[in-house]
Length: 275
Image (tube, rainbow, N blue to C red; front, side, top):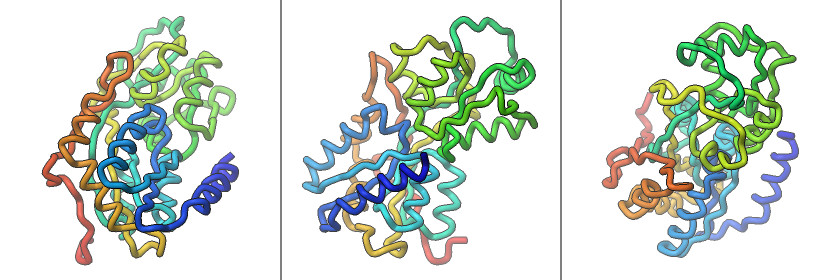
């Protein structure tokens, strides 16, 4: 499945001619599925007269595309991997834009007693409840693996399904299989009307889900359109764009909390003397 996805991406990349007005962004499926990026794309293209193409993949693949200089921008949610990406010199600028949270959802018919995140995950293992994972090196998958590592155990192969798919597909599979899964709140709210699931864990400060924009370093490849990527960074940190994000909602539920400063003070720059 990952190989097919990579071939699809190569086809899309080959169809985008590298004109000065073209911009390529790799982002996570969980963000793309909400529809927010369509709103931002429309406003950006109207204001700056550039063409923005969005490729929806997991954060892991998005970062790999950035390392190879295949895209100009990343909009991802895997902070530790992003920090390494910047430290290794693949990113020129990074700014955290917004956040929501990861939540744990499961079948509505399950009525179990548990004390917080670790206890619930331990019971999932010990009682062999089915768990569905994205299994795609995305930011969501990274967070899930971090939780298993913290409790020192993981479901056996019969109780664990790795989809290798995006968040929306993974949620739908978990719903069909009557299983637990870890998801970002935005995708859950987006699909809630199609799901027979409920939230088991929410509001845990350790499950913050931060989305950041990274401008890929022009040193990674000839196709990186650095000037236009910087214009997008200017746009996404403008008051107008941040207001669009803050007020974006599905069924009356706001999906994101803006954390960027309109002044651009939150931009992380890469410099030659950075460790």
